[in-house]
Image (cartoon, rainbow, N blue to C red; front, top):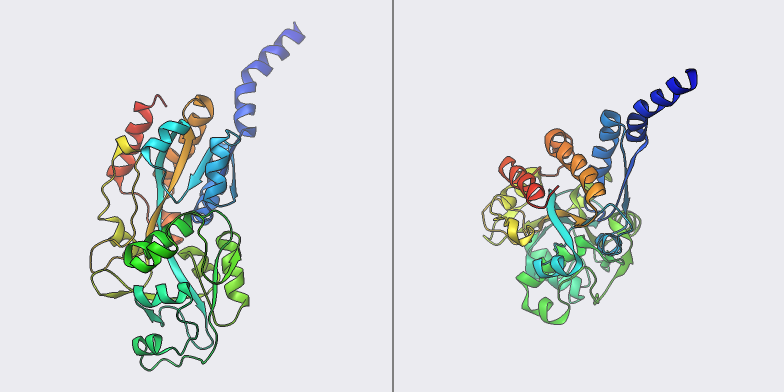
Length: 333
């Protein structure tokens, strides 16, 4: 009798214990890592479920979910609807942020250096090689720019941040589009590569007179000087929650296209020109792990906005969250 009671008790407790010790594994973009890791920490406290998210770059995230080696992948470069169908994947956005150029120039702080799209293209193409080049000086009257060689820092891995950045450069420059193009990996004309947003951040911190590009949270956390950019309306805007939100306000999301959408070069006087969403990828047939992933992102949609805003990410608007929840139901999740 005593043994029978012990067996029954263990059966009753087993689901709870299993839940408390369960782990959800994801991998991909470094762009959203600060907010995903914050959400994961709080989610484990609230539910007992651990979310193990590896910041390995969007290319790695797409590769791992395509190979079914993780429960979910993350990419800042959205996958086209036909590719989603080919790979058997579902896709939805989870957060919106901004890619910002960052510099390490003595005496120049955040949002002080102004660049146009054309000048930035010339820097990343290697056509402008010194900080006191007349094209830069003309935009920055009164700013003391050194007679120093510019070191370009870019990503060395397959990167959604790179995809957002190079798509922007391709949209604003025919020269860039025809010579270098857009993608998670491109053949960079100049510069040195760092792995992940973390790698680019560390290089720019260490290399004097350098310029790179990262998700804004990395610039803020590491106290790096971000650049003010001229947007498509001709207005100079600095990177901020409000300018990212302004860019996102023009988005037109389509559920039947797997929410495939780019936010770069958005209209609007207040819009940041290099905004982007980070997307979650699920394997259609992995029903059980998909439900666990959806529980996490549903929790984040309900409880994670305040944390996202503190980290200067833009939470999805409520109508989009509701639409994504209906997308999950349509796909049997």
